[in-house]
Image (cartoon, protein in one colour):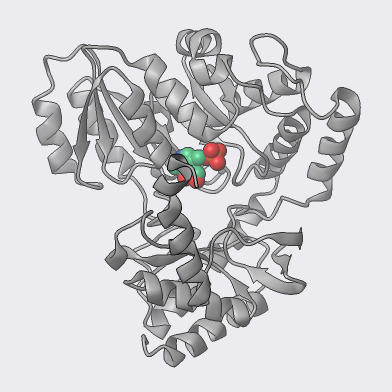
Length: 394
Ligand SMILES: Cc1ncc(COP(=O)(O)O)c(C=O)c1O
């Protein structure tokens, strides 16, 4: 065995051990999916674990537009956007900008790359970035790569943030960056208070609303619309991989900033633009987000029904107020066990365990969709009731 292989051999042992214990939950391989259901190992399971909040992944208009783009442009542009893009990409950027109420928007290959590229381009030596401790990994990585100084404030703790801002007057730019919806907790950043503090201390506010776009607010514009502060956010970051059902990320903001990102942001300039078919799928999804508000209404009814049901059973959903409904279970072993037992009962959820999170914070991350029927939610709640009692946790 090479030294390199030896260095990483403990990973194989850990995986083997977890597999032997029958609680291996990493990356299920689906053979087919349709609506709220997937086929895993030949069995149909109910999906309570994906980010297709409005149920658009297999909507006929989405599929039709993606197929047309495939036929018109092929499977990829095989080039970075700075060399070659398509009319579909251009239309998507323009529609995203107008949807979130910004002057312009630029696409990135993913929201992960968008955070890295945007944060490193906006900041320079002499600036300070102030980040919520629970910000998404891609924000943390962007912050790490930036030349600016970094400070973290306790999750959603506005007095801690103010204390830090009060000491940052000497920096060139002060940049506060938060998630709109926190993807492990399902809670929201307190955007009105964040806007006030950023205005008071002359700081720039960046919001990554990966889980809010399409879902939050009367028109689905996002968490800022939900709070009525959409015009007070300086830079809006979003993903195409959740409610907009394809792949890619985008940054929206003022014309000059977006021109800078489009021409110099490394993860945009030095990486291939998303496939035309993905851009077309998101354009179609965006049209549905705009024109079918009843999907959001249905989603929120489902969220409340599901979350209340879990609470009634005695599960801790960590104060979630969104379609991300975590179920805190408190240790890796019990979380993996419950995930497997739920799967045996036909319910697919995502276990979040170390090293992604501290052991005592282990949880199932579950998601509700607009297209879940009441019967499907009842089926999930019944499975949670049975396995919870079987494991003695409720
Ligand atoms: C807040 C947040 N930002 C960024 C990302 C990365 O998104 P993408 O899949 O587009 O890279 C995620 C994905 O889960 C997220 O939750």
